[in-house]
Image 1 (cartoon, one colour):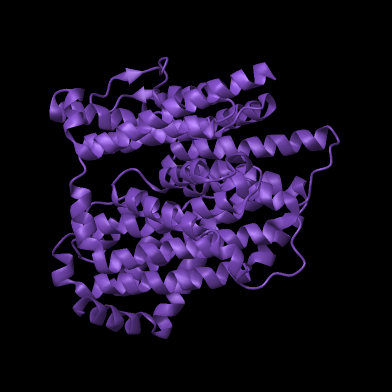
Image 2 (cartoon, rainbow, N blue to C red):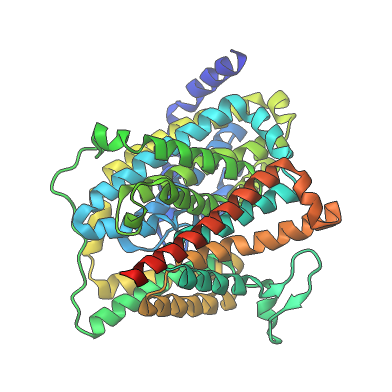
Length: 502
């Protein structure tokens, strides 16, 4: 009851006019950064961080939370309308969001994304507010062995994503893994596959890769269509949509999907270093696996949007748990927020709840207010977002190209990252021309480095891989992954046999 009393007190303070004004500004700034390919929530938080120095601790941290929430949710806008994820968390939103928009259901697709972003956030913030210490205690039980098991499980999901063409999907995934091997090896720092180029020692940046595969390749495809005289299909907005945009029946049928995805997002968010992009991809794969019509995924159905957006927004609350309770950032954005605590003379960790309970519960209350602001701003702005697509492509695409290059450079201030963006753009374009899926490539690229890192850390800690099997949590993830892989191979082989008999 004490927690509830403190939360209500903090909620009253957060709802003061000045505080609300800063949070509205933060959410809008976050949405803008999140919706522009090449920019990100982490960049937005880094930009706003120095501005909070002159504010009170509670107000400053609340504004950072507002930017974080707006940034993660904003990625769905460009993912659905342009097939270019604004943030890494929204990668899987492209798979069904853009095809749905191309069917003339852009408003509906955006409404699904916005509403279930809100649902995922609400779920994770309830857990954050009332169960943060207990959830953090569970996270402490995860060693490198358990983290390897989760990443291995995610890697095996390539087999599910490649259903119907397993061989081509696995080849695409292996190609993604190949690029993760470039640069210095984790743990021992051995230099691999740099060919004497010092720029490659740090490997290929995740942001540059994603911008290239999705945004640059889409620009090249659009340019080709214009050159060949093919008429680009325009995205149409439905005639009438309500503010929420969904009927009760449309909402109700997605509840099981949303619950499963929120749990995945929360669980992944609690584990430091894995991040929202992995939770979005994993929840998309699990939704496809659980669906009665998996063949429809990728053709523009709401299930894929719901799974991804619920999970990556549930990751926000999950990532804040280890930050507040243990002082360990769960992802890149919360690492920036840790800097915010230091700026205001606060020490994140167990004592934060004792010494600065007003700040902690202020953040909890701000989370609730900010997701409500996010829901209203994005819902009211849907028609404006779609109208932006009426800008001629010969103006819109060069602007996006410039923003992509600026975003790639801004991440690490390296021209090499801009060059990498162009390289991966060409690779994404070739994948399109050859009819290959980029999904296995992206999943393996995101998870491949983590698989190697956690494997090597685990072997250093336990002296042998066999010792991993003494960890029950690892056993669960590992054997489920092996079972799914065997089942996928069996299903692929029996499906091929049936085709031959026909």
